[in-house]
Image (cartoon, rainbow, N blue to C red; front, side):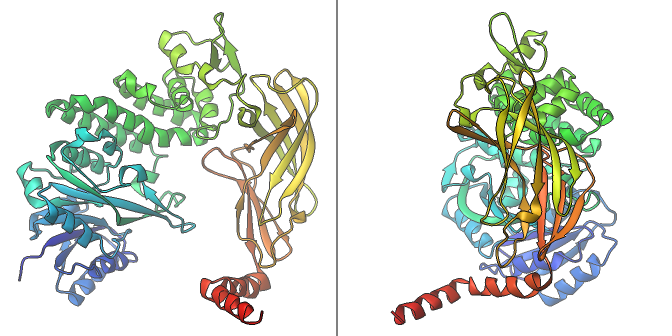
Length: 548
């Protein structure tokens, strides 16, 4: 057999359903001189039979089955490396795909100049709603050639092994293989590749299609989405220690702050966003696992974080865990704390007391948020639903508490409005927030979702109510946080099934879901979609123009 230009290894474990899609994406590559190794981590479902069938259909496909399950991605990749015949190597997971010209684009980058690897953009596709985005777009926005990772340490954030085509000689020269027996092996492998590579090329075109299922059931979730498991936290911390040791041993200590910042901003940030949904025992164990490692990180890595993230991390380090849970609900959304405290010098701190240590005061000092002076439209409040009760029909009654820690609102009752917009028409519910004590207001709102004016073709989607305040001719619109758990409310409105439920992730907003049913779902909605297609619209415009 002639030597292929590229070997693409498709790793798989118990994924007979999606494996054909992944392999098909490699078979239809515009550069056809390649081999495909299906590396099966000892699957127990129909995967071996599917792999054998695919190999029988295309002589470029080889089927490799491990003798025992390794429990990770490293062993299947490493075993495939042992038998790969091409001078250039790529890796693909069985639940993902390669764009049609991925091999051609990356191979062209290798042939332009001698490099150790080439990398391109990763297109993320949400399996729940089909939305597409680019992973770390600022790092792959333009074509560029780099002579070492020091030229752009931000690339440590792009730790995927699957977005790259490696020169086999580079991997063999440094005996670079995937670490076995640990999870998050990509992070260590990619850090080593970045540091050992003398030169590499980045191209802006998509070379990998990553299907993301953020809300998959725990048994089907990817390793990255199993953050509820403390073993998952332990594995992430463990691999960080391995990366730190490699940086020290390889003479790349200058990258330590960038690597620490990446851990805080990416890895730890994902756990921080989940803290509101963890119980006290989990939070205690989480703190036990991460605090010793946080104590080893460079101070500059913390200083580069947004203030809200620094607050959550420090509350964990100070073991103020219930407060860390509260602070985490506002991450990325400009949600205020319930309380703030000022010291004798006028510095403002998160929470109900001045922190004891100098480091804690520095991290929990939120004076730079300018809560007292920032323009009212961007002011920070905290709106929480204290109670939800079901009303008649499709209505709900809400008891809402607003926290105004900077005392931006005048003394006395405040006019407030709930806003929610299924389709083009917005529901406005006006109600009054009455003062409970300084900085705290409470009110009651009756939200009749059955009064929503839905489009003729119906509305399929999720909406989260917002709360609007007005003061001196200015308005402020903010999130409305709901209880993290409450009984799901379901009912019927004209042509729709309606569900009111907790968001279940992120800040935990009140979530309202509309689903068309009956004639609207089966006839009207498909008809409107067909009429909305670009070709139909163009034809309609041509007819209208001819009739003028």
